[in-house]
Amino acid sequence: MADPYRTLGVSPDASEEEITKAYRKLAKKYHPDINPGNSQAEMMMKEINAAYAQIKNPQANSGNTGNNGAYHNNGSAYGASWEDLFGFGGFGYNQRTENFQTDAERMQAARSYLEGRQYYMALRVLAEVQSRDAVWYYYSAIAHGNAGNRATALSYAREAVRLQPENAEYRHVLEQLERNIRSYNHSVTGYGFNLSTVGRTVVGLWVAQVVAFFCCRMCF
Amino acid sequence: MFGYLTADERALSPEGVARYRKFYCGLCRALDKEYGSAGRAVLTYDMTFTAILLSSLYALHETGCKKHCILHPFSDGAFLSSPAILYAADMNILLAYYQSLDDWHDDRNLAAFMKHRSLRRAFEKASLRQPRQSAVIKARMDQLSAMEAANVLNPDLPANCFGELLAEVFIMEEDGYMPVLRRMGAALGRFIYLLDARNDLRADIRKKRYNPLVAYSGTDIDAVLTLHIGECAAEFESLSLTRDAEILQNVIYCGVWRRRNVNHG
Image 1 (tube, rainbow over the protein chains, first blue to last red):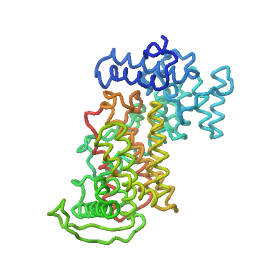
Image 2 (image 1 turned 180 degrees about the horizontal axis):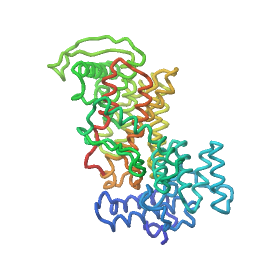
Image 3 (image 1 turned 120 degrees about the horizontal axis):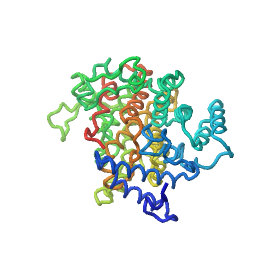
Image 4 (image 1 turned 180 degrees about the vertical axis):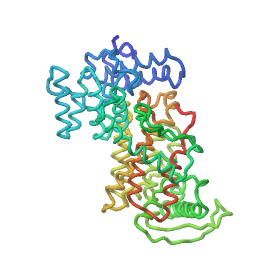
């Protein structure tokens, strides 16, 4: 990738504050919400986010070219993944863990940590995995879910199911995460509330679209 | 942060509306009595909800009263008093004080500064009365400030932090209800935080202010919001409250969605 500091327009020894300011200045210019329908702006935003991620988490990003197909359009933020951009469980979790040589070793370690309920350790190892497949999303969903990062967990669980729709374990995790969405929507109907008056349709469930077991998309 | 825990009166029965207003007026009276006009000025529906919830949960004794109200001269002036309403008044002050601090940092104008100054004495009084909550609110607000300064763009992190803040507000007594109230309050806090972020997104981008959703393009926000409010609802249902259930359900299943910019983001 091009020099991230150059992309953001800051010098390599810029302070955190300067980097943040630069980022927000660029976001004001290129953010898709400000430029609806402008695909150029969207591309720029992807690059900006990737550059920002690179600066914020250099170790986690080493070797990730962003050309990995699993990176884009999978619930990751405009071209970079969660761990890259923002760290997790409190900024400061981007120190390298013990030196693993291969992704296989890292994934093995992640699994052990999950089984031992050490979710933050699992997240640290998972952040260093270079190639992200369905299993990576599955482990990450579990780790984030148990660490309380619900939006992230939901995104990753949906991605795992998208990549391997036939995998029952992945579907199970997703259904677990979504169970409160389901029961809430049923209660809304049960109590007779009409949410269209507040501009909201009942949330359609992503699982239903993939596996078409049942249709949960209700419109008032 | 305020204005999300409201009822949709169109969907309440006449009795429900009357009860809701009696609580609201009761909170106003309590704020006025304990904290004067500065207190009255920060009256919220959000803390009215809190008062109703806790009053119901603990089956607290309520005293009904009627007094003429200058601001609402044609109403019957009926209002309630209860320990939960007094508690909600204390919480209202604490939260409004930190909100005013936030506004002062964002707006940097005289009006915001004056508002913040006007709450100083009330805040000190409320802090003495509710030291545990005051300490937690301060700690969490400081954490949120740190996240803003660090430009944390993972929305889960600040949402969880604000959730913990609101959870403490819900815990009037450190008793057996604490775990449920903590989970319910935390889920509600996460919901409010994210909906507020979503509502403010476009304006924040334009003004180059912090917003945790700037880089977010993950699972649609509505699903995430529903997940949080769904957790809150699940905890609420586990309490099996009967008194004022109509109002509480109205807020949780309908009212919370009212404050959203339909032309969002």
